[in-house]
Image 1 (cartoon, rainbow, N blue to C red):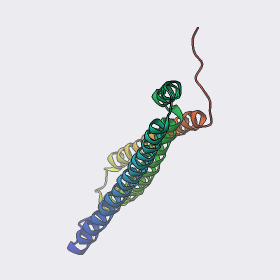
Image 2 (cartoon, rainbow, N blue to C red):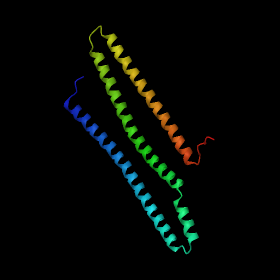
Image 3 (cartoon, helix red, strand yellow):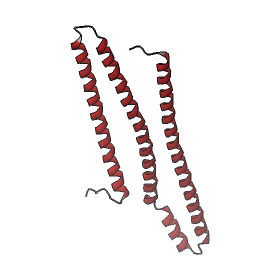
Image 4 (cartoon, one colour):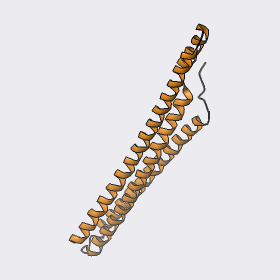
Length: 176
């Protein structure tokens, strides 16, 4: 059951590699968000420039008033597209990190089960009850983790469905 120095070194190297991968995925997500914000700002500045040109080109008060009125209206489609893009980037990054965590949990469970089996093989006579109890606790914790993970995935799917339903033009019903 004792681990040798090379085993610990290997485990530490794996942990550093996994941490580096998670940090890289997180930074990639932030980079995508920054690119989205830059694109949004650029488009906004271009639209503002075009609006200013149109306002300066107005030759009468009626045209000027109509332009100002049309520019002052909120742009829900633009906001919706931006929010959808942010959600997509966040979801993708979250899914990648969740995948890394699941791999880590699976590896940890395998190591724990191996340690329990090694301990059981070296356990003194009469300790079968304690070993069986330990195995039951491990099985129950694995089942609980799996159920929580399944519930989290279902919640994510429901959220994705709600967001994609809105993105396709579904509008919430209003109370009268």
